[in-house]
Length: 386
Image (cartoon, rainbow, N blue to C red; front, side):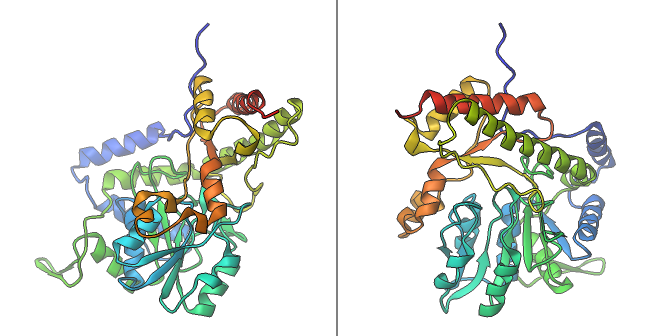
């Protein structure tokens, strides 16, 4: 009997039209930043209601340049969450500022806005929330806090392309909004990202910062008046983004349908296995605002005899891939060496130790979800403490 097909935790989807569009760019001879980048930025601007948009080589660059556009630097503090990809706080350190970590809400797993005010000091210049798995924070609360304390907001919406708040797309409202187009995102350019800005002055500054601080004048004039880097997006990537944008509505519909099946089938399996009292924490059942970038559960480690790594290995043996998004940033050596402690954000520490990302991508079948739900619950039953 052959082994079941392996289900990775995610897989990008590029149709023939995308492959043909990339081939056309390659044949054109203009493969770096050029007309397709300009078209992609213009299309994204329309998508976000006419706001200025600039694209970058990756989602880390978008956050770094957002901080620079906001004037964040040495001596400043930026409030953020410890549950994110470490790039979120690394870019704060990178501009010479200090990340200030606020604990998370155990239900949404996003930064707990009720705890933000107590973390604000005279050095606080900005708040950088993260929309984990595509679920936004309460935007009204977020901006009420920012306005009260006169803070900039840099939204790490890396996972939230296509998400919304009260019917408005994330990115069409707010301050500086950063998205990632990395390979596992809902809209992928393989590598890349974009930054939604407030006005053309910010957009011009972002343009200079992404390419060595360079400003051109006329046919041969150029000047450099700020220190920039090399963070531009190539036309090869941009054309992939243009094609992916056409497919985004169908991707979103399929992701939501798969998420609904996860809720139904995991609950059914738990009931069938007599594990209704098991504290397996499912995500917020939100089918209005989130883009269902990921489906994450928090394992009941205190109720089973194995740890997360062993659960992941058991699932792998069943042909099911998983991921960890994310351990608490404050537990990394770089941050511990600077005095950060996971004990200062105990909810984030617990979630970071227990969270597990299950497969979710549009090409999955309904049968895949059933297989994953059955496999996960079967492992929990096998190792349930007496």
